[in-house]
Length: 305
Ligand code: NDP
Image 1 (cartoon, protein in one colour):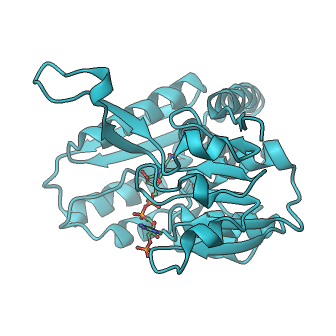
Image 2: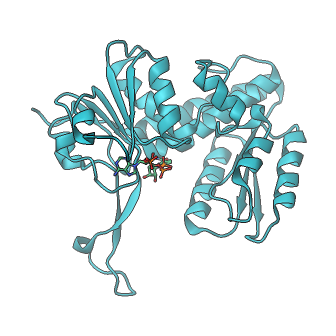
Image 3: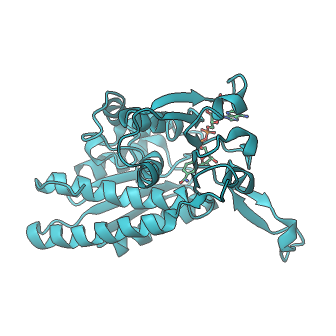
């Protein structure tokens, strides 16, 4: 087979951000509403700091008001809940995002369930989970990574996935399960696979659409891929890359890889997302789109598609 089409998530994300920026300018000119995105981070986990930094930067670039609450690692659950409740009441805030993971002494579920579902732009609140799982994708805030993955699938296959077999490897609440719900809502026939699945390669080879959300570097080799499949690699794994040489401290440099072995899968697939530059950039773009949608709702005007 010819080499697969490389699905360019970076370009798709840039188009979404461009639209969000234009729609934000229109919303603000028409109603005076400036979308507000509040990001709450507890502790100093370096990866979380990077994610939060780039979310805040993108929000500002879109014309949003970006609010950042940086709290020390020892912040009590009660204090954090108060921060969230205050943001719920703040009319200038349309989206609230609590960066996960939270320190162990804080009950993550309790914090998420305290966020006003109408400001839950991450889509983790049970109300939004319920809306999505009952097929009400119009009302739900959909978690950003699966929502972005779905847009990439649509770019290749269109809106209606009738007759397609989709396999999602991974059943987490933030990626695997909502991804499966979105595929189902688009009429695909969906299988959710996980660590207890028997003959995982065989199950994956039945997939016209294969979504990998496992967290294991390059686990899905060519043997998992059906000829002509569309492969979406959600995984982000940092591994050592001795071929790139050594860092100043003498340890090998590192690189990012997905859950799919790109080289092998690309020889069989019709289209495939790279890592980096595939699903990753879509996540932040969808967060911006969700925040704009929330601001439009609060201003009483129709949200852009
Ligand atoms: P979780 O660790 O929460 O879930 C991983 C899932 O993979 C579980 O359901 C687990 O099964 C399954 N799994 C693990 N090992 C195997 C195996 N050997 N065979 C089959 N299934 C297996 O991860 P997340 O869903 O949070 O994230 C998945 C990946 O996506 C990670 O690489 C993460 O970094 C990346 N990610 C990327 C984002 C982006 O912006 N692109 C955003 C969020 C995550 P079981 O339930 O049985 O244990």
